[in-house]
Structure formats: structure tokens, C-alpha cells
Length: 79
Length: 227
Image (tube, rainbow over all chains, first blue to last red; front, side, top):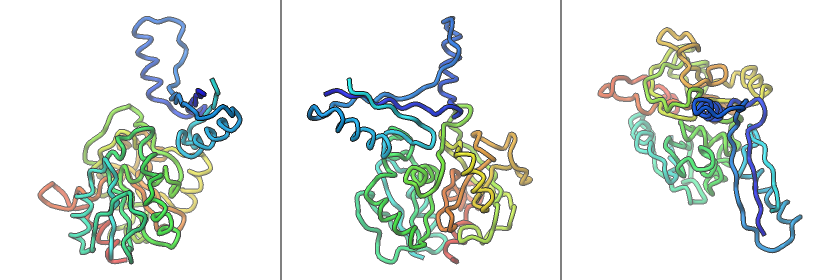
């Protein structure tokens, strides 16, 4: 079973990397970009087919390691 | 003073910390991160600078969850001294021993230069050899030193006098252009609630020898040895 954990910065946390990417997109002439926030995606192969158990395990993984919940949010999806 | 310097894969300032501690008269040793225990009768644990685990995931995130960190947490809970420098500060924040997080520098650049710090208080085991509000000349070398925390955490740190050092100029004037990374309230280092854990981005261990241009870093190690 495939799962995906997406980690993003919380609203209000300064994201200088996102800002730099935003500036680069503007300088490339790509139109319609209002703002960019950079995050991380973890594609995880889960053993077994219990979606609920996998979600709980990955939520624990996010809390313990994948996200720093002081400044980041996370989302777990079973694909 | 018996000091244990924890070596993680990717640490690179353990030798500097070792030299500074030795010079101050401490009995220092280097401990591997995969060990479960600290050497018996350790007074001080030092988490040195570097790029533990290549800064993968987040700076200090993986080291903060290494086996030895359970022993470091227990040592801190007993009132033992812990000093985290640069990557060591990032590890302390990731391990939950200190609040907040070190984010990417405001202007995205890695900064490597001499830097003045204002000593916020001199009644702790780490700073007794300095004067209060003295400007000390040390070094910084980091890409992620921008200290951030919840508003209430910042307020708590300020109210409880837990800011150890702030970025300043040679005249001890804090902030403005003297802040190299955008850190909240110009914070360069913070203490734990009981003042026995100190995390700081700058490198006092690099300014202990007149050969490299300054000895203002000595005070921190002298304070610890005198504690």
C-alpha cells in the first residue's frame, strides 16, 4: 500500500526559500503566481492493507520525526 | 569537571570543543552517538557543531532522536549541565530539551564570520567569568540560525531571563545590522528553565587562542570548570 505524508510550514512562519522561488518564477516571466510556500513530500510504502492502522502509524511518525510541529503541519494520505 | 562530547556522524567541531575544554582544565572525552550511556560521573555534556546526518530532514532532527539523547535527557533532568553549540543547539531544540526551532537564515545565506554577542546575565554556570552585558567577540558559521518559537514561548524566555546571548555590535548595542540571521529578539542562545542547559548558535570554542585573533570564548569554558 502506498501512502504519502505532506509536510508544510504553518501559516505565518517565514519561508525565505519559498520567497526566493517565488522571485525566480517571477523573473522567468511565469504569470499568475501570487505566492509560494515550500514543503516536503514523503512517499512511503506501507506493509499490509489496513489503511486505518497505516494512517495512525504515519501520524505517529509525523509527530515524532517527519514534521517539527512547532513550525510545520502534516497531512497523511493513503494513495 | 568531567565533560563528554557527543560525536554524531557529520559532527565536525568536536575537536575544537575538546581543545577548549582541555585548555580550561576539564577532563574531556568524546562519546559515540550510538552508545546508550554517558561515561560515569559526567558533569557536562557537549553537543558540538557540524552537520549531523548531513542536515537531512531538518538540521538536528535525526541526531535529536539518537540513542544517546535519552541519556542526555536523563542527565539534564538530574540537573547535569548540557551545552549545545551551533548544530548542537539545533539538536537540543529538535530533542525537546530546549523550546523553539532554528530556521533558515533570513537572507538564505550561510554566514561565516566574527560576531559580537551581549552576555545577558552572568549568574549562570556558563557565564560567571563574563560581565553582565559585556560584548564578547566570537565566531558564527551557520545557514539555519534564525531562532523562532511561539509568541508565548518567546515571552516566557524573556520573562524568565532565559535568553543567554543576543547578537550585538562591538559596543554591546543589540540588533539591527548586528543580527546576522533574522533571529527573533536577536536571540543567539537560550537556557532551559533550570539554567543547566544552554544552546547557542555562535562558536565560543573557536576564540580561545590569541593565534586565531581572540580569546573571548575562553570565559564560557572557564565558567563551567569553575562551576
